Length: 432
Ligand SMILES: Cc1ncc(C[n+]2csc(CCOP(=O)(O)OP(=O)(O)O)c2C)c(N)n1
Ligand SMILES: [Mg+2]
Image (cartoon, rainbow, N blue to C red; front, side):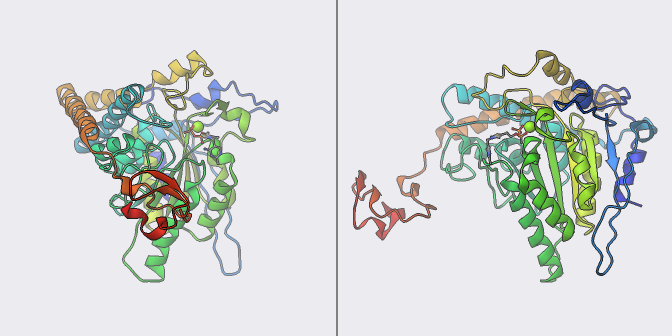
């Protein structure tokens, strides 16, 4: 039996509207037409393609069967909550932290406290929380330029993330990375990446190193890597190359596509030959799963299976989370291209509101407890801003650290002035 078949027994819960839908809101909203005139097949809100890899000496790994499980089957079940009280509180707090932190980022950006592009994650929190809160500290996360919330879910302190955004020395990359390059060795956050697709091979390499440590070096290592990236990125070659490599070597990795339907101003459906990204897993010999990414509980169920599969050494999984960003592509984007009806369809399915409703209706928490969390997070984010604002900028000596090109001939000299052709310059760039 495939590990992912556990999804069939998911009990019913009211998140994502509380009603059974035959087709995905995303695909139905796309009116089932493609620019090429092809009729698109609607998928269930959770569609699971189960592929069983056949590995025999001298034979290739291949997907031998695919079975789409209908939502009707999966949602039959009891009204018992699918999470504990502690889990509900943790998921809620993490999503509220992501949302509140990002709303504050917008304020700080428009007040001129941050430089360069800043891409917010508002609306997509269920994906980060649903996956990352299941991981251990030793597991790795690879992100994109939309990386602040992944960093927070993985445990990087809010002050360190905010200080990084302010370009301060107390930032998690000492102010050298900025918004698009969050990194924390301690928390195994192995990067935000500004170039799309760039993180996927890095994540594949991290997963390879876990497998190598376990199987070659005989270390007790069952670490898993989760790679997050967008729908637009799935049209890049690195995506396919890494699916191939990960399946071939049965790497402990989960590829998580955050399909928010847009790549800047390009609609997903106009840019890809088959918009159902999850279907691209089975041809490589790995399960492909489609899940409602506005529902943290569904994401978490899928994540449990996929992460567990990777940890048991059973190989990679491709998960497509159907989600939506509530703001423009970046804070510099006036967001005029997206249809207001589409926007309101998704904002009405806010994952935080849905979890709150679920947790209260199932008697897991009292509303007052959630309000107390909101207040706690407001304070935490305020403190993060104060910390970032009052932190000193990086010292001048940091300017040319990690610059690989020989800076001979230009730079800042010992007298603090910019100079060219200083023959003594390369003698100690960190001391200038
Ligand atoms: C290699 C590369 N090509 C082009 C770009 C410009 N670019 C920045 S964001 C983006 C769209 C990415 O869309 P998607 O993968 O769906 O992620 P989202 O922004 O929706 O999270 C593009 C093409 C880039 N950053 N890197
Ligand atoms: Mg996108």
